[in-house]
Image 1 (cartoon, rainbow, N blue to C red):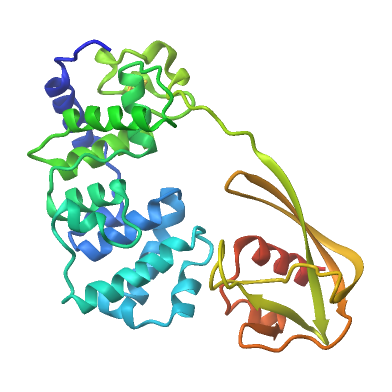
Image 2: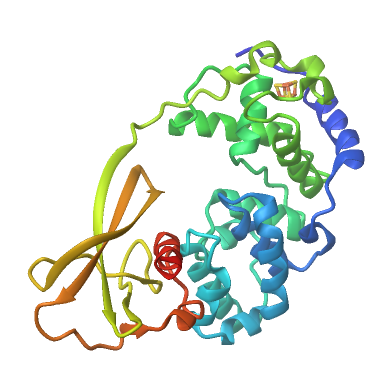
Length: 331
Ligand code: SF4
């Protein structure tokens, strides 16, 4: 890769563009570190338009670290329901308890931020720069796309060595005087102009120095693991008009509610009632729901319930099981 003496010029072009093009998003109107952390965790792997109503409802329901720390886990998971990746909600809840216990303040160093639950390099850099003005360059999917295209970088971004190189490039690009604005500007460029497909290069402030512009969709280079198919069968066990549901103890949906797996040792199987398809990690899952009855007594414990249709909405369900509940209620 050739040396690039143009970073200061690119920085200035980007800053000028961002001043006129930045979207007015609710988390850009605050300097409250708590609100910034909430937005950053919600935005991980989730679209801005999806996050906005969740973010606003969350801050109305839990306006401070202390309010979130006091809330029961069930209420927190319910407020997060529909955003997916519930580990983020559990981490945020754990973080609120830790911050409240420590006096209500987040650490203001990269090292301190990296040690917090749910904080990887990206979140530490985003919160450190946006909430505290620390000169830390963010590297997320949007930033990687912009940088690999700017440099026409042919290396596979799923390799740790490529990520390390890209972090060096992001550090070089960073505006140390305005790290918050700069980081948000690169991410904004990736989200609104340097799009994964059909990037809007004619509107791009960096078009003149972009080495990958003529073949932008070739970047970033990423090797893809093949998707694996999986089928699973869940049981719909009724007691009158109530449905048997259980609370998950363990991954991937710890604390959420679901329909149980069909167990031929303990249940008799009836007809197929519904099919739901969903993706999780590397799997494409077909979930078949069958009517079932217990062979013996139904299990009784604190983590199982027979729920009526009107009660199901009050429980935080894993997304595919929420979809199944809706299908069952429609049928
Ligand atoms: S010129 Fe096109 S490919 Fe290059 S950074 Fe801008 S939008 Fe992305």
